[in-house]
Every structure is written in C-alpha cells, then in structure tokens.
Image 1 (cartoon, rainbow, N blue to C red):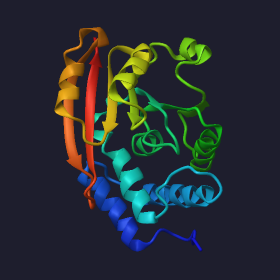
Image 2 (tube, rainbow, N blue to C red):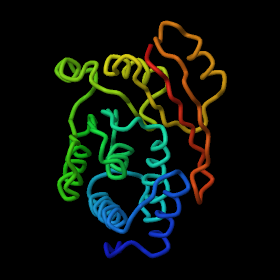
Image 3 (cartoon, rainbow, N blue to C red):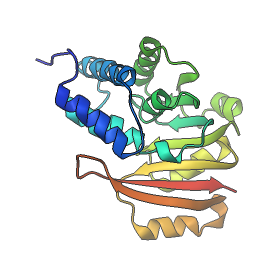
Image 4 (cartoon, one colour):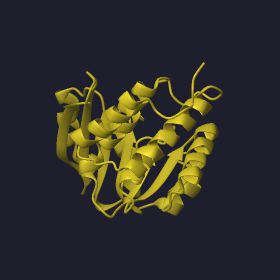
Length: 224
C-alpha cells in the first residue's frame, strides 16, 4: 500500500540537492509544496494513469528535477505555453520556482487537465491556467496566437512537429524550448538548416539528470 505521509527524508534531500545542481534553490516552503504535489500525484495515479513513474524517488528525479533543468533558459518575467503538459510537467514546477512567469498549460486529455487544475488550486498558484484542448483547435489558436515568449514541451512529439505547432504562438524573437532525450546531431543540423521552419537554433544543452543516468537534451530555437 502507498503511504501518503511526508516525503521520505532521502527523497527530500534528493529534491533539494538535485534542484541546486541545475540552478534552483528551494526553501522549506517550496519543499513542502512539492511534497504536496507528489502526494497528490501518487494518490490520483492510483485511479487515473497520469504517469508511468510510481515511486517517490522516480517522481522527484524524472518529473520535478527534470522540469527544473529548463529553469536556466527561461527569460524572466515571461509568458510560457506548455504544450502536452500531462500531469503538469514542466510548467507547474517552473511556475512554483519562478512566480514571475505567466504559465498556460494545454493538454488534450481532460483527466490530466483536471489534475493540473486541482494542483493549481490546492497550491494557491496565481498567473497560471490549465486548458483542455489542442493547439490546433481554432478557438485556442485565435485566442493565443502570438501571445508567448516561450513555448515549451517535454517529449510531446517529434522535434519538427513541435516547432511547427509552436511557431504561431510565439512572439517574434520568442523561444521554442524542446526537452528531449538523446537527439541525433543529424536531426538537429537538418532542422537548423531548414529555412522554412522560420527558426534559428539558439542553443543545445546536454546533461544527465542529477542522481540518475537519464540524459536530457534541451534545444532552444529562436523565432525569426
């Protein structure tokens, strides 16, 4: 049986030290907020398939710390759109550690959006909303076109699809930030050389998540 008491001390330390390793400092209040997020995720996940990761340690490393890895590449303050946000990653953790950013989450699965709204409500987060739908939907497109400084996604789709879908929602000079696993150099080169994508490859960062062997590649594309 899963116990929903306070996060184990070892995992709290992993959260704090892992966050620090990617440039995020968590105070006690923030740790308590992530503790609550984790407990609610485990609780909901027993009834709804929100994530395949079902251990405290796995959630801390592969959801929370992984979300933090994008933090150094955010412009602050800014408006951020998280496409295919699932159980709220990376958008909700980024909002929790950087309140100055405005965050819009969008996912096509209503149960996941319900969970996002639940977390936003119980944590008392302001300047963040969760939308049920797809970025291709006409109403969403008309409402949000050209409204964001950053569009982010974590393993939402292939890189080309993500860039194509992101483009209309970015302001000129805005950044599409793709969080991927291992990306072949050839794929990155082809994308950066394709003028009709209307992007310039700004930066590629590869890292291993702290306390794991999971490789994360972060690609930042600037909208021309």
